[in-house]
Amino acid sequence: TVLVVDFGAQYAQLIARRVREARVYSEIVPSSMPVEEMLAKNPAAIILSGGPSSVYEPGAPTLDRTLFEAGVPVFGMCYGFQLMAQTLGGTVDNSGAREYGRTELAVSKPSSTLFEGTPAEQSVWMSHGDACSAAPEGFTVTGSTDVVPVAAFENDEKKLYGVQYHPEVMHSTHGQQVLEHFLYRGAGLSPDWTTGNVIEEQVAAIREQVGDKRAICGLSGGVDSAVAAALVQKAIGSQLTCVYVDHGLMRKGETEQVEKDFVAATGVQLKVVDAEERFLKALAGVSDPEEKRKIIGREFIRVFEQAQLEIMQEEGPEVAFLVQGTLYPDVVESGGGTGTANIKSHHNVGGLPDDIEFELVEPLRQLFKDEVRMVGQELGLPDEIVQRQPFPGPGLGIRIVGEVTKERLDLLREADAIAREELTAAGLDRDIWQCPVVLLADVRSVGVQGDGRTYGHPIVLRPVSSEDAMTADWSRLPYDVLAKISTRITNEVKDVNRVVLDVTSKPPGTIEWE
Ligand code: XMP
Image (cartoon, rainbow, N blue to C red):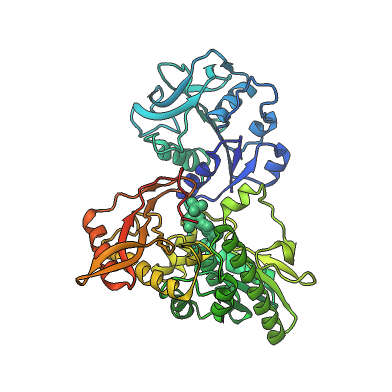
């Protein structure tokens, strides 16, 4: 394992991903973790991330010197580089020598471990206020910039390396190569961490954890729960039962996709609960978005809970495990890593009755989203599931502005299916993050169709591009694709006489309309 020590940078996750792209397993640990504890993890190498602090600030994070003396290869980046310099007796000046953004790095030792085979001049991404003016004793300066005399150094004998810039961002043109040089040449690691290994490892771990007991898993139709279920299925087969709640707010073909494609690909035991009537009844007369969300969430929990109880009655009381598709970013963000093995039922999404304790099985806890997709692919899940765009839990219920009724849902399902079909046909699925299709049920406008006046509803297309859904921009789709979608929707969907395009970024708009 390569440990990435997080000094409070948004870069730590990115570094961990880059290491994995180099096919080496990495894990993030907080810089507050005592060095002893880090070393107790027996890391093959350690990377120190950047961070917002200055080494001069009172209370700035520090590292015990023993980290550099344990014989473990260390690579410091930005703040990590300065901390390494300062801790080992180099000089870091708070001289106002700032550099932000793209800078040219001049490599002064072309045969160095990190830079061999890379250009003598290369673009790097800087973001710092302090600068290193003298490397610690025993170190060779390997690069500099116009502003910083010591922008990279190494002590090859002690396997200590550092760069002032951020090799993990794509603006540093040879960053990945430099990182790989550290991993392969500096630390002597091999690129052998693959999704195949992950599957093997997880299958063994799940078997060990579950033993001969039973597990259940809620399937949402999303990528994470599907891959988690497929992985657990591979490990324990018929000891797993999946529950899928059809709340009637799904898109066209979605339930069938889970029922047929997912089961065909995995052979999983599936319990489908048809709860459409129940949800529609609960949503009748409600048009406030927050109210809708609360009702859908509440009903979902009730139905799921009921299904779980039924399974336990059928299968016996030894159902003791709940499978969840928790991903690594969730684990890091909640400050974890070591994890909570045993949770009380009412703390999890299933909201189980108080007297049942489930142990969690979270086979994707180590993985980033794109890695989950690779695992899914390797497990033989179809592309329609693995490459799925995000879809909100409350489904089409929050894509109808106004009251949710069966008729409106059917109408929106048709319009949404047409938009998806045309986007797929145009090969645009990978270019857009997602494309909500929204029915403005409370709005009517006048149209003319088939020589007669119509008074129908508008459909909104909301194609967006995004990296993480926190911010988004509207996608500039080709006009001919938009035209085709518009023509087909107004021709084929009853009561719709207008299609409009949402050209708002997020912020100020959210991706969904409710
Ligand atoms: P907003 O509308 O907040 O959406 O910009 C950001 C992302 O989250 C999805 N979304 C949800 N996902 N349950 C979910 O699982 C929800 O209640 C929910 N609401 C929004 C949305 O589709 C987008 O990808």
